[in-house]
Length: 255
Image (cartoon, rainbow, N blue to C red):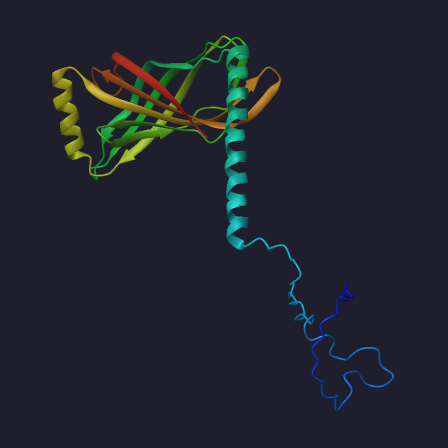
């Protein structure tokens, strides 16, 4: 038997690697573990720096201050109106105020004649009743009042009311002497004669008087009563009985 040939595996020869050229300069300097610039593949750009400005609260502008002042002023104004309304309601329900009433009771003329210079001299004596219908309110009539009698816009005579206090549920009769002088009164006397023939001579009495209201023991500030009385008389003859045909008085208040 022929000798059998044994076949042994033979590894293929590895390809020869090309020899790399030796570096002419070292990649890392001596006595250094890495390059100063680091690994170029791993090197990243430096992070961006954010410029942060310090926060400062905005200062209130002049316009905002004006708006706040206006808002506070309106609030205080409405609050004052509410408080005044509450006070007025309390006064009304507790004291139940009523308007005083006035009337012209009588009138007497002691002088009403034409002078040589065509001026008219007049002296009237007027009685006015003032009635206070309130149960808990008194009225102080102060100095500084003014009363006048007018005929068709012309002032015939004037005077003033006395100073006095009128208590609760009280009626006071006021007697006043009024004097006056009217220049160029010829036409005025002709108008008076025409109205006398008709049987009615219209007169207006106006009174302005400062008063103080007393609520219980509390004395309030000064007010002004404005009294207007319209009346018709039968004549304006001197030393004759003057008949008042009708009269109507109205009262207003003013601070």
